[in-house]
Image (cartoon, rainbow, N blue to C red; front, side, top):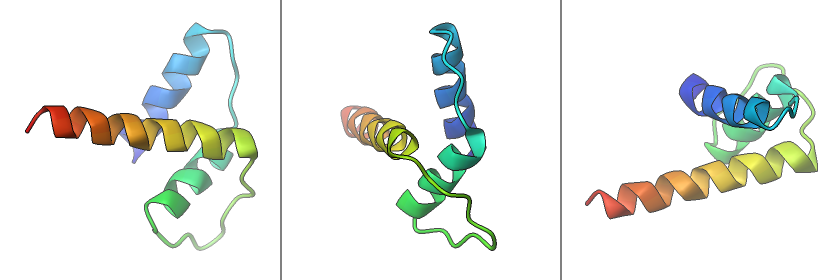
Length: 65
């Protein structure tokens, strides 16, 4: 999970874009159906970025089969 988060943050940093890592983490844990003890509020932006990253990972995985 941390690797995915680092990838998103690094990609955004290249574009001089600052992200809320806690919101991203909460979005990712929701997407992966992991329960958080104290979830952080998510934003539409973090939800969208996580959705794109998960979809990208699925595509790459299917190409590697």
